[in-house]
Image 1: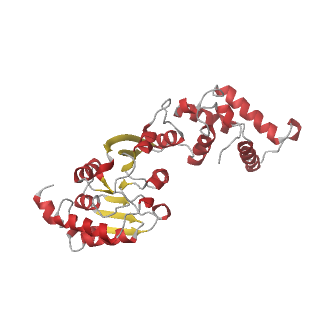
Image 2: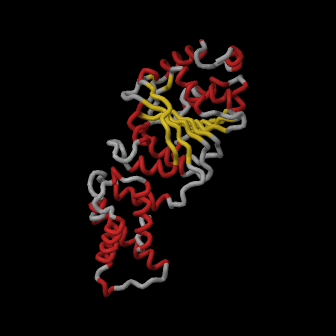
Image 3: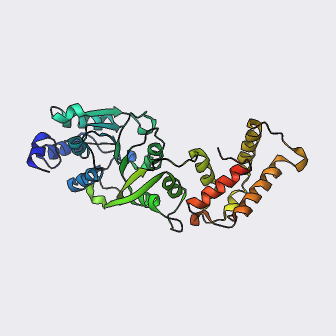
Length: 319
């Protein structure tokens, strides 16, 4: 960072003011690790994360969990506006103090509350040192935004990040992998060791870049996710095994009855019970797609799309 930037933000990372502020924080309150409060303290890593976002001067950036603002002050240097969603009032107060009296003050809006319960304004980019408890919900909330961000640069626990990136056949490939990769392109940006945080977490971290596909796939999210929930319940068992569960059959039978009702189709009682009808349809689809004996952990998007389409053709739905 140049000298001008350091003068512009008196609370910039690396300054004496920041060191004093962090000592103050350590004495005033303890970080709540149950809320995932692990503050990124390495200025090089912080700057690297912001640089990877390729922020334009016209961009509005959403930051989730800004903490004491080590990422925030860097984002403010490049963005038109930063909307920071913070759950801890103490952190929000410290961030407010940090930018008070600087040019950055007018560019920062702090939304106090739970990110998952917050109605988000429009934003172009999302940057987050993500609390581990909301990693998966956060990703799906971003994916399902009416106007999703152009790019998201997100820090996660290493294993979670690797699940986002895992491919069919990998040991970490799971419902999360297949689901996210349907709607977005995910790339690994950097590894971040635990000693770059205060207090250090128990695990290593990674930063990923998520770019939501545009145009979006013409698939109903709830239908897609509903199918994946069934086939990945035991990813190393056959796909057919997932459809033998009584609870699954009950849901699919209920959905089938709804489908018949909505399409003004009569229920044919002569072919046996409704449960038997649904079982027969499932068996037919699995045999015709030749996916009955495959494992979800080795299937790709094409396999799941083929399966979903075949089920829809016979009136079986998942949401």
